[in-house]
Each structure stands twice: as C-alpha cells, then as structure tokens.
Image (cartoon, rainbow, N blue to C red; front, side):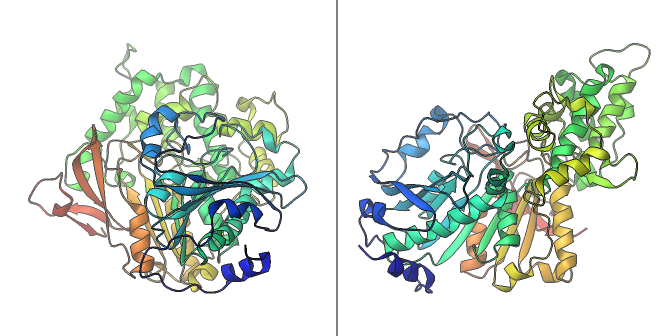
Length: 526
C-alpha cells in the first residue's frame, strides 16, 4: 500500500491520456487504509455486477428533482450495474461537520474520467439512482461520487441548519468541494492515476451546486452541467411564497387543481402557432401574450371559467415578483405553458415545503412561523442576511473557470413548475456581460432551453437527452454543441424528436417533413 504522501502526489500530477479503458492497480479493500485530511473511510467493498442494493434511509418526496425515487422504481438500474468498488467516507472539515460521501469505481473498463453528481431540494441523501445519480454515471464508465451535503433528510426540511452555521456552509458549498477533492484522491489510489477529466452533473439544487463550484472552486471540474439551477436560492425561496400568496393567502383567489388544464389549454390555443408548428408546445413562451381575463366568468361561475380573484392570481403567477416598495425585481415569474404543474407551489393547503422550512428554521428560527405573514420588502433582506452569501451562486465572473478551459453547459425546461426558467436566462446574460458578450461566452458556456419540459424532467415536450455526452464531446473532442437532440417518450417509445438550441436560438421548422422529426428543424436566432 502506498504512503499517503505518494498517493497525494499521484493525485496531483498531470495524468497521461488514456487510449484504452483503465483497470484498478489497488485492491478495493485496501482503500480502507488510505489516509486523507479530515476523512474517515468507513467502507471499501467490492460489489459484484447487479448485486447493489441501496441502503435503508429517508425516502425522498416524489418530485422530479429528488435524487433517488423509491427503490421499486429504480431497481432495474441497479440490476444492470457492472462490478464496482464502493467506498464510503465521512468528512469533518469543521467541528460541526458530518459529511457522508460515496465514491463508486468501475472494477473494469474505467473511461479515465470522473463524474460527480448533485442533489435535489435540501439534499440529505446520497444520490444513488435516477438519471443524474451514481448508478447512471457508473454504467457509462465513469468513476463517480455523491454526498448527502452533511446531514440526513428527505430534501424538504432545513431544520438541520437551525443554529448550526457550519452545517449550513456544508450544504451551501463546502461538502461538494471536499467530496470532490477526496474523491479524486481515492480514484488515484485505486487506479494509479488521477482522472483525466472531471465533470459535474446536477439539476435543481445540483445545478446550484455546479454553478457554486465554477464560481468558488474553478479548478475542481473541467466541465459542469447545471440544469434548472436553484442558484439564486434566497430569492427563489421567496418567489415560492410569492406564488403561494397569490392563491393561498385569500381563499377567494384559490385556483382548484381541476382548473389547471383549462388554463393550460387556453394558453396553448392562444400561442401554439407562434412558432410555426401546432404541436401543443410553446417553443418560446416569452413571446406569448395570453391574457387570463379571457377566461373570466360572466354572471355565473363554474368549473369552466375563472373568478375575478382567480384571474388576478394567474396574472401574479406569470408576473415577475417585485419588491412592493421599491419595485426591484425579486425573481422571474413562471412561464406560460407551466400551468399543469402549478400544484406544487399554488395548490396548497400549505406553502411549498422547501421554502416554508427555509423561513421557519434558517431565517426566523421559529418553527411556528406562518408563511402568510411574509413581507416581500423586509423579509427578502432578512433571508439574504441569514445566509451571509453561503447559498446563492450568482457571481457572473466565471473568467477563472473559463481561463482553465472549463466548459459550462446549462439547460432549463420552459414548463418548469418550481424554478422559473427565465432565472437561467438572467444568469446566462449576466455572465455574457461579465466576459465581454454572447460571442465570447459561447466558447465556454451554452444554455439550452427545453420547450415543454418540466422541472429537470418530464412534461409535454421532448425532455430526454444526453447532456453528459454533449459536454464530453465538447471537452474531450473539442466539438461545441450546436444542438442537442431531445426525445419525447410515450410508454418508453420515442414518438417525437426535436433539437434543443443554444440560447438565444430556437428550433425552427424547415417547412417540410414530419414535425415530429428533429431532422426537419434548424436552430436560428429570431
């Protein structure tokens, strides 16, 4: 077994290019003897092909941004896994830290690269399954790692951070960075070489984590995928209450979930043809000017129309949230087309749990706080002060990351029901300004808006696409993604494909051929 100094040296030097997949040079069990700063390795176990069973733990709520669906749903993913070395460790970079990580290492055929995967909500779990979990990365030949960010939970609850500032820092940024540093050392010890390339793959909280890495630790990753990032988290959580106030504060404004399809159909009927193709999906919802007053009831109210207070609630959901005193923008509104998913923020009976928990435990430290008392002037400031910059990843100056050759690939579904999609456009635009314009930023950063896609996945539009392959091709083969083909799956079968285009371009129909075939569309800036 090598000494700790030798292992550190091996992880630090520039590794050779890999012409062929690489295999281990050290036995998996030997990794328990590895000495790393602030780290205790608690498990180093060889797992045979198809034998992995997720350990018992908190069950995340059934939302598309959570890292691990119930086991019965994802069991086939685990049955298809190749043999691997599973390493678990606890990291304690502060006196109040208790960060759990896992590092999975292919027993054969390692592609020479590292893919770290992100979390959802308030985290609290290792991301084992799903499209952005350890299992998916391992199946593609990557060494991979995940962290619970320093606490155990279901993702909806921030009570772990109440009066624990170090745990808040761990969740905000430290856990991911520490995991990344130690995972690379473990990889080097197992294979005898550090990873040739390192990627981050996350959506929602995972998208925020990726942007935080690019901003705070530009040397950690060569490429970062940041889907639907919750990067302006203090403002995002306030916006969740903005939508909640619109429908839950006054009973007269409440919109029954049964009316969502009616509003959605009216929006689609009004704006679907604007992109030249009637397909039930808005290519660019920002161009839609539908007025919900068209749905206002006459003399008789029924399930096929909206009352006047409900019309105002719909307008509020679409509108940019603003400070009522200063008019300052707080956060963009949800896009037209997102109506079918409004239940999470607007459906009640209570406020969205991730946001409600934040203000109860982190901001006001009062478990009995009532979200209906939130003040969009005073309490915005209180929310930002509570974090002291530990949670928002909004710094637009990514020149340190880009100067190393780092690539940032963002994506966001236009029908996102939890994080307004224009938030990603706002961040992209701010970075472009900081580095000298859209033409300059396109060499290092691209944003892909996905029409009809919900939060991180799903929706009426094509929402299945290989963003990891796009990033890998960009970095390893020097081919920037000019378009990413996305598929809509119905009962597991692709019945529509469309190109996702680098913002500000959109997919435009050529005028002939099937509108369900991506080959008949081009990406153009309108």
